[in-house]
Amino acid sequence: MTIFTKKATTLNEDLNFGMTNIKQVDEREKARLSFLGITEETLKHVREAAVILTPYKKEIIEQFYYNITSVEHLQKIISHHSSLDRLKETLEKYLEEFLKAEVDHNYIKTRTIVGKVHSRIHLTADHFISAHHMLIQMLVSLVIEHSHYKRKQLSETILAIQKLGAFDQQLIVEIYMENTFKTFLFDVSDLLNHTTQLNSTKQLIMGMEQQIEETHSVNLASEEIRASIQEVTNYAMKVSKGTEGAVQSAEQSKKIVSETLNDIQQVGNVYEQVIKEVSKLNQEIEQTKNVVKIIKGVAEQTNLLALNASIEAARAGEHGKGFAVVAQEVRKLSEHTKEQIIQITTNMESLQIVANQVTEQIHQTGELVDHSVHRAEYAGDALKDIVNAMEEINIDTSQIAAMNEEQTSTILDIAKRNNKIYEHSMNTQEIANLTARHVFELSKRMEEYRNTFFGINVKLYSQDIIRVTITDHLLWKWKVYNMILGVETIDLNKIISHEECRLGKWYYSDLPASVRNSYTYKQLENPHKAVHHYAKQAIVSYKNNNVSGAQEAFIQLEEASKEVIGLLSNIEKELSKSY
Image (cartoon, rainbow, N blue to C red; front, side):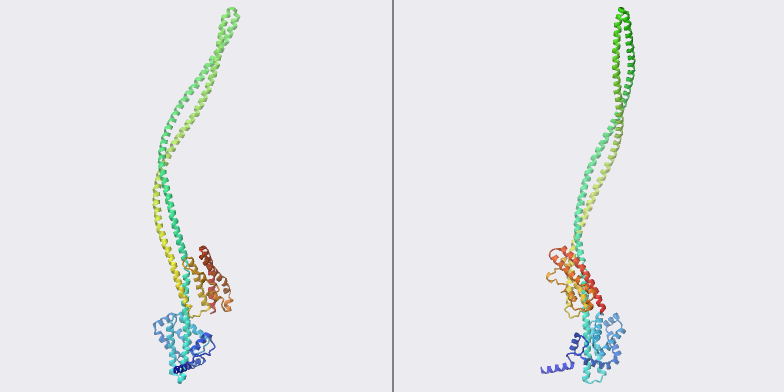
């Protein structure tokens, strides 16, 4: 035990582990320097070795890249990302800074750049460490070969070169690992960002639901159309039967009209005979009136003669009494004849009036008969047209019935196809739901993988945190989105405020004045609050079975989310310019 303690003490003294006296770096680098035992004395030994190594700088570079290019994988990396001449210039600068051995912020920065470049070109850490060890070995070999140091001084110089080389390796590998981890982190974050943009699942599911509803509607419409077609067919059959009866009735009416037309024409013939007879009656009446006039004249003459005879009989006295009696009787006969003639004249005038009225009525009847004949002829023609039209209607209704049968068959085929569409829609909707679950489960696994990077001791700067918080933000919205789809369940107790999330912790942390005074930074707080507010509102609404309220809150969440992401992207750009 004593021997071991003594040896350990001697070894510690030789390696000089302890506190560093280098002050031009921050606390993190001081801890590394202390652990490696690098002090100003160490750097002094390196600078002393520079006197021996500087003359061989070109030779070191050539030999180094000769060994490097002999490895096919490394040769491909060089040819793809750079050229030997550029790399030789870079290595020359590195050697100059290494041998100058002034460890300060600028020195740390140059090693940080080397680490970032190696990460960017995907040079693995093992290749870099091997190559760097080879470079340090070349430096040590040259010191051993060309120096005239005594053992202690030579040992101190070699240790100094190895310590500083180890410090460089640690810096570069750490930056390399940090950037590599960040690259993986950001790649996974970007992948998650793209995954969260797959928000068409909702539209697909809703579209399939609408399609299923439409297939129901099509089925109902098809059934209604089929029923309507059947009803039309039935009416068409009824019309067809009715039309056949109507055609028969029309044919019968046509016959009756034809017969009636003949009868009316016969009436017209009789009417003409009546006209002729009435004309003869009028003629006879006129002739009779003439005879009556003659008789009337004779009666008047006889009455005058009888009057004269009476006068003469009165003059004759007794001898004229017998003649007077005769004259008196003749006068009476003449008066009676006159009376009868007056009565006959009156009767003849009445008969003529009646005959004229009959004649007038016969003329009117004649006109009505003519009109009836024309109407009967027109009715006959109309009935012919009606019969023809009814026959055409009968043909059309038969065609309609046949076409309706074809339409019914087509509708039935549409219904069958629509049922298949319904089945496919149901399957597609099921696949869409399953796809939504798989995509969300995949995003959860990626999130779990992403979260492992936060357990690694990787330093995240403001620009890195913003990139990470953008993904955090999109993931939060993604979970709410999938909750509304019924894929995710969110515990209300796990909802955090805008101050407790990663973005909130960064936002309310002790940031540089250049960031806090930024207009974009100041604009971020309110929409960030709104994101958390509407997210919680959507979750609470969904928990209360208020899906429409949850969807409305999610729409508000999306609007606030767009504003937050836009502002974060602008802040990220502003920070990238300052680095």
